[in-house]
Image (cartoon, rainbow, N blue to C red; front, top):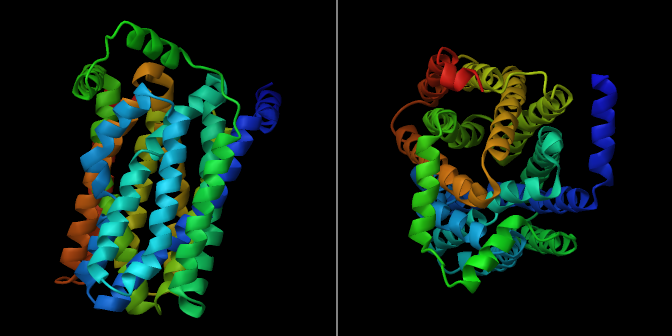
Length: 411
């Protein structure tokens, strides 16, 4: 019965035109993003030769979440989420298109453009997570999240490998042009959706007609109060913040490891693609097991596995030995993130969904930015090996503690 139900659910997702448009548009857009996420740090590293500057440009992709995440969540709860996402795509496309022209005149301006692109993304990412329950039934959310995750990580397998090739053998300019075009594809697919009016929009209209429009700060305070008063959501958020610093540090360290030891962007693309292979496998597994795995155990045990894998480059000095650990890291990462996304989408009411996602992104991306910046600074002083070991501990220890706390484990 379970298997048949799973097959029927998958068929329902395929017949859901809005979901198909969402997956297709994001697949194409994220292919372009993989090019840009290699091109931006490589452009700065090639221009400045500075490890710290490379870490700084990567941090530019996370800092706007700290500054604007809560405000973006309030905006997404006030007005049409799809419209905000389309506007973010248009802005991001224009900014990325400008990078090759601006970079020839000012390297500092590249940091500004990276910050602005990420600022627009702050209004897109929580919108995507908040929009999904509007187009997919509650019982299909785990599988829908697994499909989105698998699709995103197929783009990492192909996109990062292609990025390493394009940046090394073709031109940086091409990578930015392609990314700009894919934002346009994302906007078109979002506009092609046929969405019915949600209760959130109806309530907002009634409030507007009575001229009872709360301030943005009132919206944010309401979201903060809900987050603080919901014990399991608060505990899950605290765990996520704790481990995200280690995960954030891992990304620039792998980039620097590839540059210094394994021949640059080609190896970095291969390493990221290895993680993505594992992520796709993990996405398929968690989708097939939807409803049969306790969310809290999936999150805590998955994070513990991630912690071990983050530390492995400390002991391994061959790329071929590191790759299997990166694949396992990808499997564990997908199980953790899909479980967390589904949990939050399930328990948070529609009217607060944008704010909760925005605030969680503010908190977690703030921790991620700290990890990225700290890794870049420490890598300029210390060897990479011990830093990988430290990353592993930062991820593993909070997860181990969470495994023994019912408020984290029993969700």
